[in-house]
Length: 183
Ligand SMILES: [Zn+2]
Image 1 (cartoon, helix red, strand yellow):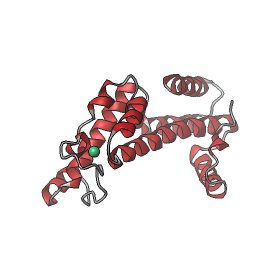
Image 2: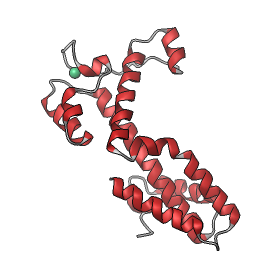
Image 3: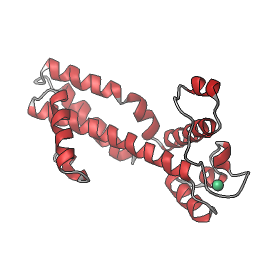
Image 4: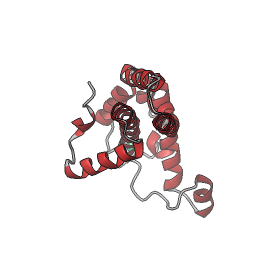
């Protein structure tokens, strides 16, 4: 996964550096890169992804039993209503906002989550949610790289590219290959 990000990052960087690129488009590209910087830290390395999942588990466990004051501190509007995990184990790591040991000790996050799901006697809802969040971050980062490439290659402002792409997704929902044009 890291190579995948690296490749796109390098391609985008090389493209932006080309002297022929319009300054306005370059500016748009740099801003788009700045917007995903936070997401990048969460997705690009194994450690980053693990840290994100842990943060998410902690936050959701707090939201789950939150009162008004905690909600304010969390900058959240509502308590979590979905269960954290459907198991009967009161010491379940997920209910305590911890990363299960089996996940910590696995060689990759994905493998750990898969193993936990398999062995745990319950539906680890909050872990599924965390993975979903992570996937949308990855999607957002990849999409931004693609949008920048399309913008610079076709000399179209990035906002315009985004608008066109979001219209595309509405018509071709579920088709993930739309962004793969620049192979
Ligand atoms: Zn559980």
